[in-house]
Length: 152
Image (cartoon, rainbow, N blue to C red):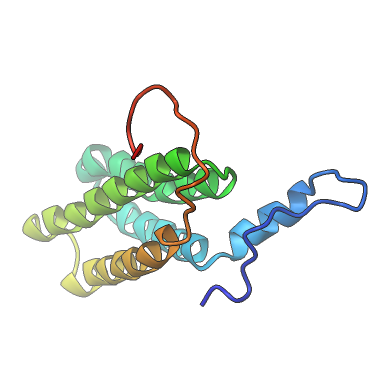
């Protein structure tokens, strides 16, 4: 699954970091692709809400979806295990929150169940990719940030 994905940052021959190659590497990652799909599905659901519900739920749902990809990008851009874990926890929390919102919308009968299920399936796919991704974290690469979390 991760064959096309190289964990090492790209440096030019002169030792300079190649931002574009690193960005391309992250955007090609299966987890980033899935998070972008989730953003699109969420945008479609939020866009079809009535004005009152869009005001009530729309920003929360879009924030949840956007943070999932932003925190992935942040975690991939740093080798520190603790920072990766912190970002991973935030990704998980926002994925769960977004998934919960689909059930709230179902209770309010705002959308056809099939439309909500599309987002739920995408979040489940994200969860499976996430589980594989977190196994790639190197727990030996950590520096104590003074908060004591994720330290052995």
